[in-house]
Image (cartoon, rainbow, N blue to C red):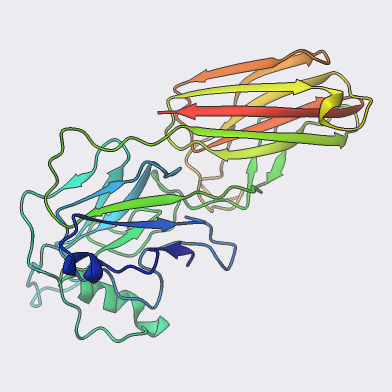
Length: 321
């Protein structure tokens, strides 16, 4: 689990009568890398045993939504009924546009009978027990059942679990690789906030050079950027000898959008498809190619270039809410 609370705990914040507790979670939804984050708090750690007044996605987050399991220290006694025991703490959808607010604080949660560290075989059972006592967990995918608390298969809407590959706009299988994995910033409010407005995400701004020799015809993926929920995207690219060894040539720029990312295989019921979002087919050396996308409704932005010769260039992407 790759996350950082800067050595500070919720208990430290409460002891100092602070209003908020912030936590940064990197590699959110990456199920492949050993440093991937698919739950907060991480595996073998207790859920947060403290009552919250609200939870919001922070301004530096590239992720725009997550699933939160939350208990008000209530349980439904249905021990005489057959089948799974339903929980009052069904998953709730948290988004950057709407924090989860609670009209009153619950009593501080406790999880005294949850062993630490948790054995892997007992994680789910202990999570269920801890949530009955007010503990909180955050997942990149919704629950597998109506009253469940564990992450589901990731094949339903709302997942931010990353795929290993997808079908691109050119009808080819494209391996999913990115130097920038999703980043989740959570703001946990320890006291009821006076919300006149909720925190907005800062714009996503990325500028990168690309320098390589390409064969004619095939489209070459040069970027996969997490734009989760951004409302407007502006892309600019330029081919110039200033960005690498001469000569440099004409290039084509293509943009694509990945929606409903999930870890499903290409043969399953929910493969990840890419939708074309615009192209500049022939762009001369020294001329800026520009693409603008309004309301992309996407999780990732893919950028490709085509070239018949060496291309030395740079691109800038600005995505805002």
